[in-house]
Length: 326
Ligand code: UT7
Image 1 (cartoon, rainbow, N blue to C red):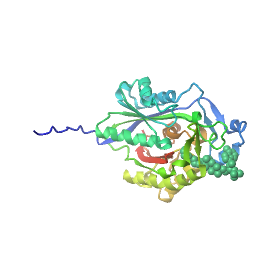
Image 2: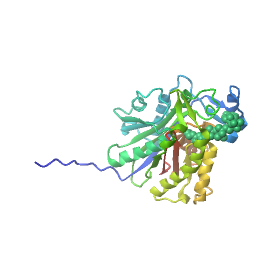
Image 3: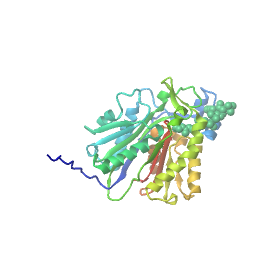
Image 4: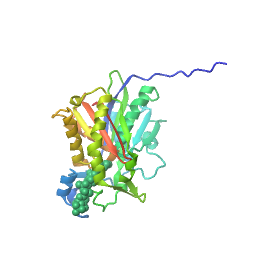
């Protein structure tokens, strides 16, 4: 008896980002506000991290609420109805509990009924992991269009009096809609991990984030530019092709170190480098799509620009890819 053969549907050869959107809480927290409650100064934070102010969510403003807003805005930006999306991915690492996930409820509230829905925890690399998975789900024929929403409420997991972490982390969400394309619009993801460095960022007593700042800083400033280079190589691009560089907004000094290394390898002096951390803080998996959305609104990232994104963080894990700005 002959075995039945599986008939595989072929997906489209290429994908692109169709739209982006983001949201931040209304509450602005300045460095001076923080210096009222802990031993720090506006100058120290500006010099060492580059943050001028950040946004903190109120108690009743949840990660899923921010994800719904950012996701809906990305759909509107793409000119799509929720019914035209079938998969929702929510990269995050700050849901209050592992069960339930964020994605199913976010999909339902946005109006994507019966969505394939799951979270990704790759910490601050989460958005780039999600974008890579979304693109490949579409190319394989498994999904039609995918909404990827990086969303975080880091203030839930930061000791508000810990001056090493409370000055860095913040809240927000950023989203991208991914769909089929005639021309290649998203390059393959370059990803990986350094699990031997697991102890450099973790939750202390399952409650608050702790990080060995200097170890992570050293790792990020030396190991991440080569990942960005690999993402370019996988997309068949040269450093000089990059119009907009968006590293995860962990620390402005890390962002600048990555840009410097890429320029030493041929990236242009006029390459626009995201500095969204100045007014948004470090929002982990939300930082890259939020920066892109803000840069598009400001006109510093334009439709058709070659964007190079690279995320890195707890795990340690990292991922990056090149894509065209919608
Ligand atoms: O997003 C996930 C991935 N995370 C990252 O990429 C973060 C990477 N690490 C960093 O960005 C930086 O290491 C931090 C911003 C976390 C810390 O900056 P740093 O320049 O590495 O500071 P440090 O921890 O080495 O501390 C230097 C000094 C210390 O004082 P002493 O021992 O030299 O007297 C700290 O006690 O600065 C002191 N310090 C502060 N002073 C004022 C630490 N935090 C503060 C503060 N205000 N908030």
